[in-house]
Length: 269
Ligand SMILES: Nc1ncnc2c1ncn2[C@@H]1O[C@H](COP(=O)(O)OP(=O)(O)OP(=O)(O)O)[C@@H](O)[C@H]1O
Image (tube, rainbow, N blue to C red; front, side):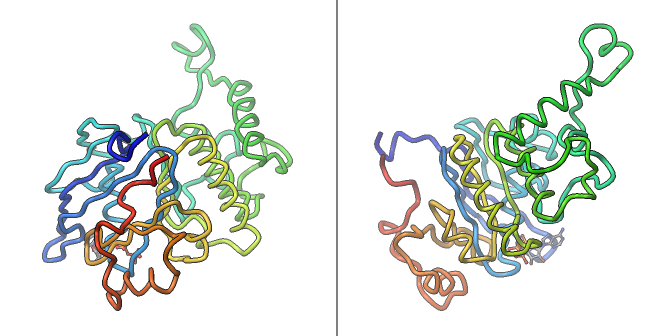
C-alpha cells in the first residue's frame, strides 16, 4: 500500500477556535491513520486539548473541516462522537467510584433485558453486562480484579485506569483519545497502562495520546504530532529524533525538520 492510498481515520484541516482574544486553535491540521498510536505533545497552553476536543465534539470549531474516514462531520457534543464509535479516556477518571466495574463499563449505555421486560419495563440485563465486562477485562489481561461487581473505589489508581481503557476499547469502533492517561499514576501502574495502549493498538484501534511524559510518548507512539501556538508545528518519527530535539522543536528552540523529512503519514507498509 502506498502512502497516498491510506485514508486517514481523522483528517482535520484549517481548524479554528477562539476564546475572546485567545486563539486556542489557529488554522490547525490534524491526521490520525489506521492502526497507529499518534502522540500529541506541546507546551502548556499550546492547544493540544482544544484540538482534540474539536475532534470529539467537546469544542465546536469556528472554521475548518473535520473528516472521519473521509466523511465530513459536524459534532455538536461528545455524545455525537461516541455514537460514531469514538471513545475518550481522561486523566481525571470519568468513572463513578461507588458503582461496580460492570456498571461503570456500561454507564449511559446499559443493556436491557430482551423482549417486553427490557423495552417496556426497562429492566437491566445485569447478567449480560457482567459477562461482557468480564470478557473485555479478560481480553486486556485485567481480570486480576477480584470481582466484576466490586466498587471502583476499592481499586487502585492503575486498576481504575485499566477499567477506563477497557471500557473505551470495548466500545470504540473508530479510535480512542487518551488525555494524559498516566499523569496521575505511579511507575508500575503507568507501565500497565502503556502495555494496555499497545494491546489496544494490536486490536487495530488507533489511539490519540496527549502526554507531557516524553519517555512514555517515545515508548509507544508511532508518530509524534508537535503542537505549538495553536497549530500543528511538525510531525516527527520517534525512531528518528531524540527526545531532547522533539522538546526543543516543541518549545521553539529548534526549527522543525523540512516538511519532506517529517512523518506526516505512517511509513508505507
Ligand atoms: N474554555 C476556555 N475558555 C477560555 N480560554 C480557553 C478555554 N479552553 C482553552 N483556553 C485557552 O486556549 C489555549 C489552549 O488551551 P489548551 O487547554 O487547549 O492547551 P493545552 O496544550 O492542552 O495545555 P495544557 O498542556 O496546559 O493542558 C490556552 O491559552 C487556554 O488558556
